[in-house]
Length: 230
Image (cartoon, rainbow, N blue to C red; front, side, top):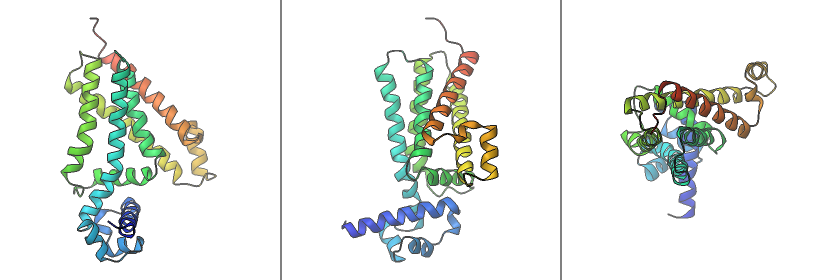
């Protein structure tokens, strides 16, 4: 692929990411995508064989990086600590998820697309997204929790994972809601007054949220499913 064609493909991906973050799949036309990327209409079919595959590629390019970083973080925990316990496993999941959602380029738009996808009655990204992206992370971290807390059952772990991910989404949504207003707006000042962590830089916010979810979830698991002495 020539450099010019590569640039056109990347422009289409960037434009599609922005548009799909603001509008649902069916409300974005191929003509609108091409215009936003300063490309001709035929380029969408040339590079992606249609809007559906372009949408799929938008999701895949962000989540592949997120998936690999999240799995690598877990591998590092299990490799460097003989018996790490549940807290480092939870921390690795939470921290990488927050970094990918809040501090990475395109993370905000990606989270908006995923929220729209989860809320939609139609699945435009195809089953490959869940098979290649969601399942590896879910299974790896579920197995890790059972490995470090052997008395946990898979049904219990399913609830634990859902709870942790729910907390993450809540704090991501809070940050994005704050960011949608002006820094000096009355709405932002009120949000910071009732939740001061939102007034911190994003890196500090990620640190505070990671600490909270890790300690809160660890305490809940210890209370509900205490470790059995070996």
